[in-house]
Length: 251
Image (cartoon, rainbow, N blue to C red; front, top):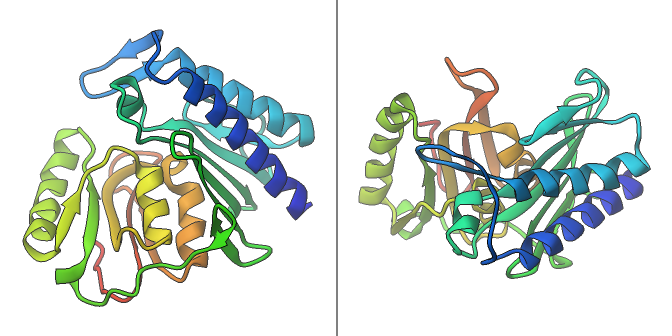
């Protein structure tokens, strides 16, 4: 069962990634253009493709995705999907975005896959094996132990409350860390923590589908994760994911 779940997640991520890559820098159909976000027809089409592969193998499993939900959301088996994390980057021709797919059983993440279509980098995490890999190479979090040596990604959602909370954190990290980054894909931020490219990823308001796969990767790669439900916004979370050698309080 674990092997089939992992192979299905991998197949779905690669298939969606290939379709996304083929459409990069092409004319795109915009479903909705919001003040700080863009929804593309390709987002929906990518999720449909992922769902079709998952449900062909597991027709009784539930889907919880950015582009919609399917099935019984109280079911033991649930897939958490972000078909294109970093849609605005994708739309503007910035080659930094990812497909993120996670499976959870009775509330616990068992499998995580993140695929960066443009670099063809594939992160895979399996609780059954206890291993997380990047293109089949086992990875670990950073061993850097000084904040002054660290590179930290800080995400700031575009609501007024999130900006008010996030800007002081951004300022603190800019003053204390070697470098601070805002790169536009939470899934890649947390995957980068898992493989040691970043020392931490901090965000005060994020959706589960953005980080579910990466959460397991950080855990299995030896890092630390602090995930908390948002105080006022339903289905949103605050998160601190880090390598573990540097103490990052929940900010």
